Amino acid sequence: MPERIERLAEQVAAAGFDWLLVSAPLNVRWLTGFTGSNAVALCPAAPGRNPAVLLTDFRYTEQAAEQAPSAWQIEIASNDLLGPGLAEKFPLSDVDQSGYGTVGYDDTHVTVAQLAALRTAFDQRADFEPLSGSVEALRVIKSAAEVEKIRAAANLADAAMVELLEVGIVGRSEVDVALALELAIRRLGAQELSFPPIVAAGAHGALPHAEPREVTIEKGQMVTLDWGARLDGYCSDCTRTFLTGELDEVQQRIYDVVLDAQLAAVAAVEAGPTGREVDLVARTIIDSAGFGENFGHGLGHGVGLDVHEAPRLSRKGDTPLEAGMIVTVEPGIYVAGLCGVRIEDLLLVTADGSEALSSLPKEPQVVI
Image (cartoon, rainbow, N blue to C red; front, top):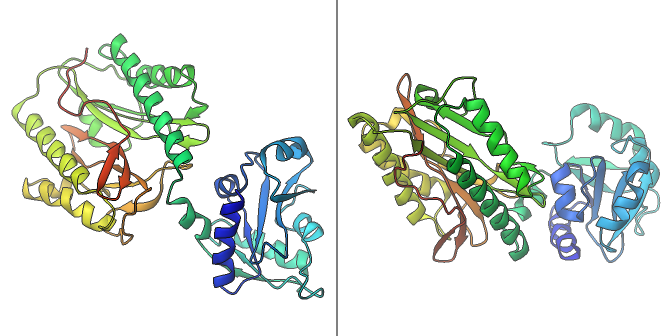
């Protein structure tokens, strides 16, 4: 945690600011270790001169003391942390006792109303200026400890799917399968799911983010399952398309194209190429097979404390991949009225390739 303060302080100083106000809960957690629902963190440009402050309310007095390391000065204020509560506890700068200097805030997480409340509470004693994405930029590269947490979440999620398939999915509704999967994930030790699971059989699989229905899964269908576990705060994400019988010629071709695209894109993941370049590997294969219009989403995304975070593997993905990033690779083909196929792995980017954190087979698998 102290090392993270130093890294963020460098960005704050480089922007010419005196402080950074961090208010997004996941960013606060990454910086401080604090998991409460109401908190903001203040990171100074000069940690040696000004304190790094974690501000929360009375409900979390003991929790903050337990979770946040000693590098953080904990302050308890009113519930209105983005307003009077912050103004009451804001530490004065040693450089200028008459004001607080320039305070950066992430305008993707602070609303217009919250910004107005801050400016009113500080009454011209601070200049609030936007500084977006500073913490997220640091979160992109995972530490060894973070990698192990995500690996553990992925292993747990895979184990839950194995447990589900041993019982079977044919003859059960999509909703029942989704609930059974959630129960298995929680029973194996996860705090919650990374996201509501997708269970989509037959033509319903043509919806990339289909919601489970009270519709029975039958023999002879493709069934797409997209699921993940959140363990110790970190997420996993995986998709497999299972078969409940033999495929017809068109379905078999769709599955083969998606699998070829996924394997090629996985092989292209390494430090160096941009997300756009890896996306193009899969997209070219799908386009060449005549299904370009049926692959409308990006190839993948980063995963960490949030199940969808930077970097993006898509046609707009300009960020070069770096060792230590964790990304998904999930091409899909969706044909309305017929079926959908998506295959997704969770990968740790390494200097010369990638390491799969997903362990379930990707070849066509018939389940009952």
